[in-house]
Image (cartoon, rainbow, N blue to C red; front, side, top):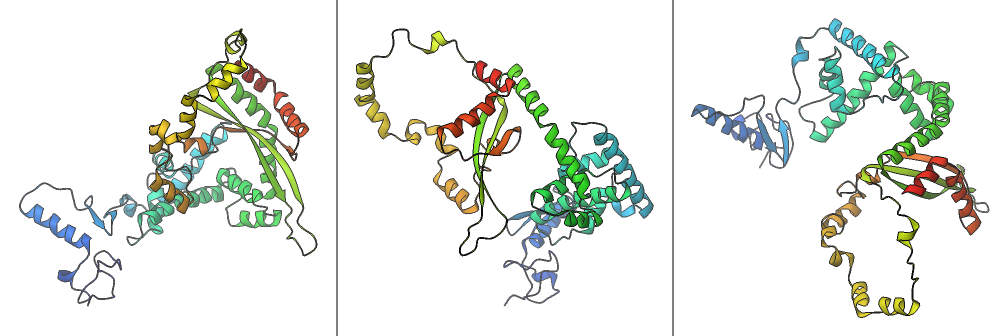
Length: 381
């Protein structure tokens, strides 16, 4: 029987790893061990292969590398790490505090490059190695890299409270999650958020500059002929208290009007009226014959997949649809994933409206047309 002890070579407890006798390398059944044996045999017969630090083996269907990150931090002293934190904090302030439109870097790969190019070449690898082990999976290591970014930004915030980009963004997220001022101030103590007053000032700044951002986005869309999709969303906001036996929670019907800009899709120019309307008019008898003709009835019996087979590869794959439904993934595996992201989305208005009658929709439409740039865009495209 196989031993229940973990493999001393790879450290895993998979079904295909273990020893008949614990500690015996000759009877290791794990795949990385066999891969290392093949690597040694190839080197013996003189076949050129990758180095041991770069050699990749497959264990349990997952690719693992024996050297995941650079070991250059092993020779770095504590004083050098302190200096790198200071260099990164100053670079972050000079890069993002002076530029109004610049967004802080949170992506792990971009953050690594930022650290290496601004006097902190060992900081990211050092902190990441402190929380990463060889037994961790690839997903866990990627998660630890994101945590490394957060920890480094917390160190910069501790060094100077002006470097609070990450803390302000996290504070806004906590505020949207109905976090109270006391809880925000508690998060500030542990370095994950700023105080409640700073968060409120940031929200007020975003609110006051929203109209300017909307007009600027529409002006750019008109000049470059970008496609703008208007979205009118109906939202119901319930009170925070739970419903009782005799009283239900109060609900406020909200109307959310926003639009999304697609920079990669060109807008269709609106043709003159004489090219849209038929001068001779529409004959009802001919229209009825065309709609009820055998050709049109045949088209109605066909599905989208029959008429447009190319759609089946992106939208109507049965196996893909089932996987998306099981994993609640409705856009990551399709060609329209970018269209379902809240990128290049601008809020026009958000007000209390039920949208249950014609007058309600007319009021929402009037609020849309009150924006001159949006009216200009609708007249051209």
